[in-house]
Image 1: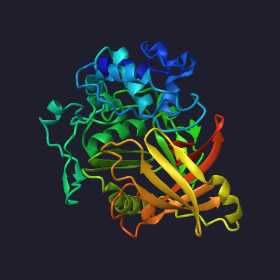
Image 2 (image 1 turned 120 degrees about the vertical axis):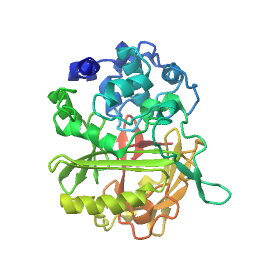
Image 3 (image 1 turned 135 degrees about the vertical axis):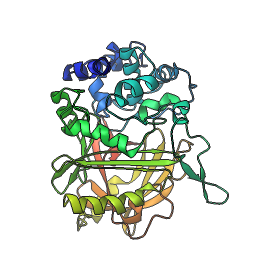
Image 4 (image 1 turned 30 degrees about the vertical axis):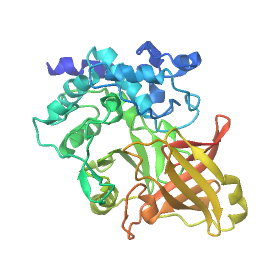
Length: 399
């Protein structure tokens, strides 16, 4: 019954978020035993887990694929102390997927459809290829390395074990808006059926951890990314695979939500064109323009020069006649990282705070439109005994 599907979600409380994750996923035994005792569900929901963020290793497509990803995490080094730094962590989401499997006693790919999507009226959601075959689905596209032409993604269901982090689940823009409706109705599904408690729904939308990069990104709620559009709180989340982009922005004050799904890696220009027009017209708000460049900062910039890394990307900050430049290059060869290499101009707007604007803001987009006005923040901060370069959602350690 509908009520049986939703009872687990309604019974979740903020106390669960504060619980040790190993209580629900007993096979999680990282190299440092103290991590298992300290890592909470909240750390994973707010991307403060500190785990190695990405482990791109195949674990098959059987029902145990997520559990086998946890085995890989058990052998991976810790990136930072849990709770010390905000840094987007796919591995934390995979642990939460395993938590769902242990709670619902079924594979993640089944739980996400049967116990989340269907009760919320998200009728076209598929988490496996055989489910997608029954409906009309677009295949992602990637640039052909020989011709530069867009061709269908050769691995559209890459790494099912990363499903909880977004590698395989697919659906329609309307499905995503059905999920948003639940958040705009204090936890009730589209048809009025209670799904989440009002207390939990509101906590998900409240700031739980602030972003060190203070421009545009406020930080994270429980799962949601929070944005600051000229003093207005906006909810959202984006996603990318090798052949697709997805974008979601929600203005709770005006009950306006926009979802965009694009089946190639050129979604960012379309996001700027469509979302800016829609939100300006319907709510009067959009992403802020670039802040004024901080004058007289030249003598202080040398302190930020250095190399910063996470498990997949290296950022090399160098001095130049114009100020600071940043070279972005992948250190892990994956279908997602092939188009990331580029050089950006970092412009200071406050001590330790920088931004990139224009085509530079469309990281990983080949031939970005020169007319773009998007702005993306960066900040250099000290935390957990190290220096970090932060882009608003992810942290890179100075090496």
